[in-house]
Image 1 (spheres, rainbow, N blue to C red):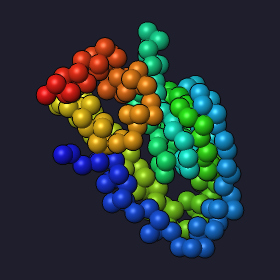
Image 2 (image 1 turned 120 degrees about the horizontal axis):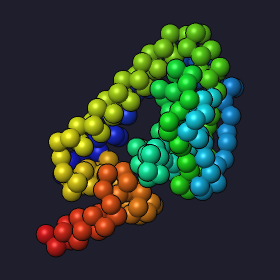
Image 3 (image 1 turned 180 degrees about the horizontal axis):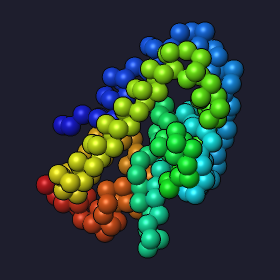
Image 4 (image 1 turned 90 degrees about the vertical axis):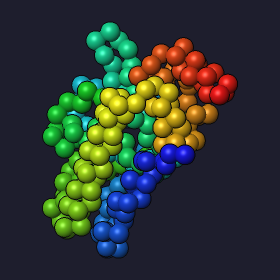
Length: 196
């Protein structure tokens, strides 16, 4: 059985180990809590992201819309993970990614100014930012190699390992979009797996 790659990667980064208690308090004083209803957007494409969110409860998706109007799911933001269009957030440019709540969601949010102030206030935040950038790069490389090197059925099996609790929380449409296949192809894959 394949491992839960995402969880192992997050665990290996051990973000909180770098942050002294007084720095954690500094962050908690400047954070906000926001609530998104199902289908509400945290970020719209074409906007410069002004904050990043830590998912306390609920579920979000990051997705693109292609020239034909098709939604392409890039990533799911489960509990205890970040919701951010990181490249656009860091570079202060318009995002080409949408971030939408798939369930009622509670986020701990910090704005760009707070993020930047923290980076300039203590080296621990620079280490955390470096780890975050490394993690996002590794995940992006893995997602790219999965599309190039393994077939749709293997990608589905990997999805089940990486997101073990999502199969009953999201629609077949969203899973198929994440896998880069049609819902009908996903149905065939599920049927084949049940028969084998």
